[in-house]
Length: 330
Length: 95
Image (cartoon, rainbow over all chains, first blue to last red; front, side, top):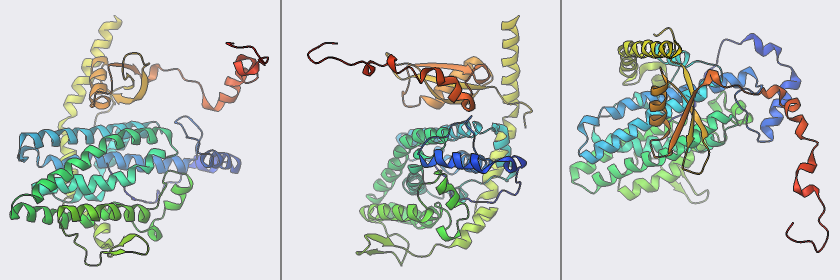
């Protein structure tokens, strides 16, 4: 589901980069400009490789961590139908994580290295998953808003210059639409229900609206790596462009539900045809990214425990596999 | 953390009878049967396939992209392999 503009500087400037010639870099940029796809074994600048590894692994981690807030409601889904749907959605998220890890691996980083980055807290994941799911309506809000924002981000990534990433995104985007619609459907039913149910939906929108807008990353003026990513055609639209697009399509959907978007400055600008919206609390965004959101410690703690608890299973399966292979060879 | 990853497999899927298997992605698995099971769960959750091949990634022999110009060069100057190379006289049909 979820990439985010988590543009951080990589401090280790590898030596290989110094061996790159201007001719190589120019030829590479010419391929990008001609809309050619770059494939795994093709020559690429180290900085391009590093940027992709960072972005793809963060994207994969987001899918994996993203299962937790929804998993919180699996045993308490209101009906068997909702439970089955939620289970299928969460399984998709695991699948998306796996597509992305394998795209990352084509760049010469191992699955274990990427997972280690997540578990040590060195690699980031989307800030949105550090918020708690307090009510069933939050599951609706996640599907509608969080997956909706993710779709905005991810559709252009289907045309990303790096072939394996673009192909993984095509697969993911095909599945996201179900996620968004099931979320909207949860809220639609709640909004048509009792006053208490509608209030629950409104409360969920109040809490998820702003964190969803933060998913697009910092404002363009503050986004360090954006220009280079655009030149490399990893990114096709800026953070602010995508955020605007999201607001424009989502506000009418909220109106349909009869819900109030929690932004006093929200107004439709006839002239531009866009909604103007209030200032995002960037301090909150920075705090969540730094690890001080409501659930950061809980999310990572749970992932580490799952990883450690599964270690004996992974080892036993490997030992069995090696034994079978040895038997077949004998 | 495990000291060794499960081996990597490449996954090929036939989406329906009559079509070839096509590369879908890759997965890790401890053995061949697990590779098939993981490939099914990862790549065919919406009935995208009727048949799956998995093969250890380490078993694939691939051409080198850096050498591709020289490698594929022999085909480049043989335009007579294409039917459009030949002139068809006016009045000749079904050719």
